[in-house]
Amino acid sequence: MRPDLALPSLSDPPPPGSRTVRTDDGVDLHVEVDEDAVGAVGGKGRARLTVVLAHGFTARLAEWELQREVLRPRARLVLFDQRGHGRSGWTKLTKATIDRTGRDLGEVLDATTPEGPVVLAGHSMGGMSVMALARQRPELFGTRVVGVFLLATSAGGLVESGLVGRAVKLVRRLGLLPLYLWLLQATAPLLERHRRRGTRFGRWFTRRYLFGRDDADRSHVRMVQDLLEETPYPVTAAFYATFLDHDETASLDVLARVPVTIVAASHDRLTPAVHARRMAERLGPDAELVVVPGAGHSVNLTRAAVVDQAFLGLLDRVEAGLGEPRRAG
Image 1: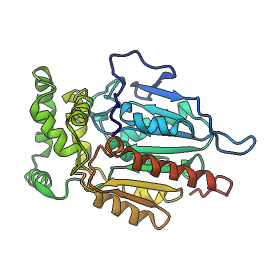
Image 2 (image 1 turned 90 degrees about the vertical axis):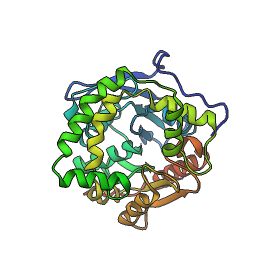
Image 3 (image 1 turned 45 degrees about the vertical axis):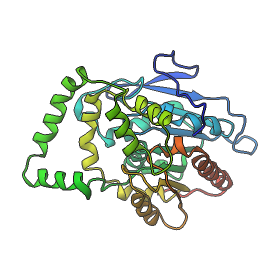
Image 4 (image 1 turned 120 degrees about the horizontal axis):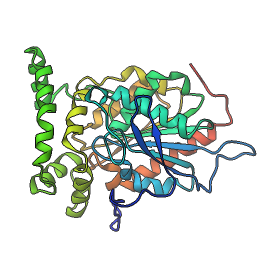
């Protein structure tokens, strides 16, 4: 990670290029657009490439800060805070689903980039949102959407194994899952009122689950801890249920129409690298898979050079193919 990295604070005014996109269910999403790209998809009269970046669970668009610097000379950038995260508004619990975040991504795309080629990028829950959009609006892929970048994410099966997986299976078998989720959501506001941020336990949890074998130091862990702890417990609890049933495997067949790069971390405890390998296998030989050794879930911050190289390589592939007929389903 770059030693001088400091993520923009939520207490600062929104930067130039900020706007609000109101979803069809009335939630205001905070969106930032970088229009000052000096590079363009080459060719007279050809539209400039836009990259839309979707962040992960309990983070915000600032997690893309390093990639934002690298990508800005190459493309027009659109970043947004997922509902309930960062500067975006919130909604009732029933709308805290991957299906809904996929629709939000589509509405941000429609509002900010009504025309021209687009690359969609998603980290963790953001990648799941990209897959959900592919299921909902497959006609976009191979026409408007010309590339996809998936970072530390999964198409499904996140709770199939391990202690959490066994516990969820037992709760399901006993018919207690609705009660468990209700209790989780009911107690979240109380826990939030008495929440202490910046604790030693919080640092331990962040280090264990967001970092890998050898990609963290104390200042980096603290920075990611501060970022993730900005999201209130009620938001975290509301989204929890959607990960239990998340399965967008079939949407990979839609993504296969365009160049796809998948980046995984070898020591990611949240979205293990085996999930990336499964996605790459389903996508076929045209998909590129990069597994970063020793890294964890925050690989875009801790191993930015590797992630940046993979991202720029995807843009090279996309731009090389824009002059060819695009496949649509």
